[in-house]
View (spheres, rainbow, N blue to C red):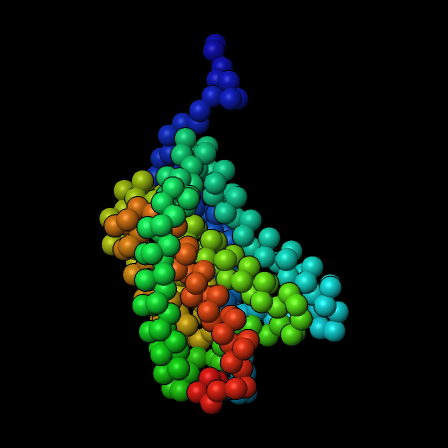
Length: 260
């Protein structure tokens, strides 16, 4: 009986295999983050202080008073957090595809940058206004984008953290997930809704405002991915949004009255 070579191409993905693959990817990445975020929200809701009296620190010190150890831990944290993108890349190669299939590449730098910058401007401004409203309403924690010590590596680490968020979330939740759900036969809108709810769920640690705001962002990003067929403009937009939030907060904290 003839046996298949271990180097032979794998069989085509079936819906069952796609579901299993998605479960594995999410269980070691943003699905796990969603579970942690839910527990943290429950903890915040059962705490004696109201939500807006509590803080959700996005990038904080990991070794106060020890800047070199802190820097090392920050870089390791970023590397570990973005590792699932490597898993996605491997799984797509196993199915005779690549990250290029979902548009996570540098083939169109000019167009991706322009689209990403325009999207960041639209989402970033409205997102800040929405956060201030929900925070004032008391349904969101006080989000602290950056709480690093004022050392030479503060801004570089904040920028790397922003890029890590952009790459991880848009490759996994926009590009990979929507691509695989489409292969499994899901309708475009059903896939976008699921992707958006996942995006909102791992932001639950910020409060209900963080959940709703990111669900809306997911709907916009998801439909744009389906229209453009490229994740790179979304990566650019997400990175720019977080970079402005992280670095801007570091410089404006305590200097403007409207910033919680």
